[in-house]
Image (cartoon, rainbow, N blue to C red; front, side, top):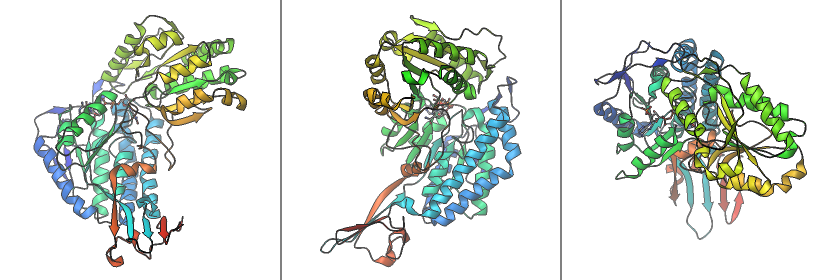
Length: 522
Ligand code: NAP
């Protein structure tokens, strides 16, 4: 049952007077539950409880936390049908997407559980050299974490998403600032986490879920002195505002913000020799996937002017026009899409690639692609902005140098893609590829950027403004590094050391004994 209340640890609370409802974008009508925005008193209670829970939670073993994460996945699966129902009602996203995203979310939780069982994530290092101190180092959790989820991934980047899973894995309690567009989905997911915590005997307060109608609750959480770090997925505007707030605290804390991106795709000439139609179709699918509401949406494609590029533009336009417009997540996201698109379309110097003119249902978005000359693109920064939705720009360049120049003029991005069929051409374009590499977190070869695999080697981040700290990723197992800090023990008695650093632990990853470096058990 969805109550509309806040979870402060195991307890439900609704002290506030500010209420709101979520919206079903498909029917353009309000969903039934009334949600109560958390008050400053409730925010304080949740953070204080999390801080108290930390005293116990940080001492739990890796195996105990793995059991907790697996129990969350299990509880989510137990209420799968209810979750999918409310997810669809609050996002307008279809059944397949809901089920796929839920599977990804439970998969993420289980992947972090497996990481804990392996044990090497603490990066234990032992240094033993004659005449030198015995030094042993490992990672430890930092304390309560605040998580802000994104509108476009109610499961995988929200309440029990990657930020929450990685922080709980690290040994940090989590307070989620629930996304107002999917508050019901958030509460139901929160109930599964709370149930799993109770079943696996985790301390009360290891997880809380705060409702919010506006930005006040998020601000209070980031400013709370007991909060030690923030995980954010959302817009550049939101992410940078929170970074500023966190840096102005008496004790500044890190905000790991994953923000917007237009994900450039570089089409090298060989890619279009025989495959203009193929790539046209592939990219029509990628640009419109999830109604364009993916942070990895290919918002910019670059190629060198040629007959083949013209054929690709026509193929992309045709394939995109054949796709039925789809619903966006919320009336305000649709309004934002229209506004941002109009801003670009009011600029001089572009050619339309799609010219769709169909009557749309409320909250449905019309996909749109335009083409501009590189010279025009370079002079006008409005063309560089993210238009969150099914929108993309093709930049037509005179030659290789201009193509490289366009990449050099771009901000940091989550992904960069190269399309190519001739290995020799990659050497000719090495400077172009270098320019792309220096601006992105993930390089894709002959594929589309949408679709982010969860694995140990994934980087989902990139130079600013794609993320606030390009050294970290919000997807994949190394996401856990955001919530830990290293501690070194010097000449510490073996029996008092954490298990990971004791002489008998087979999982120490690096030892230096009398100058000799050995790797254990990996
Ligand atoms: P959003 O509007 O930034 O909202 C994200 C969350 O942050 C919401 O809970 C929002 O609360 C809160 N927030 C925003 N501004 C705030 C402020 N100044 N102070 C306190 N809290 C604030 O983003 P969204 O609409 O959810 O997501 C769409 C954007 O996310 C797109 O730009 C997309 O590219 C990006 N995205 C990035 C990734 C990635 O991994 N890099 C993944 C998915 C999406 P309110 O709603 O109450 O304002």
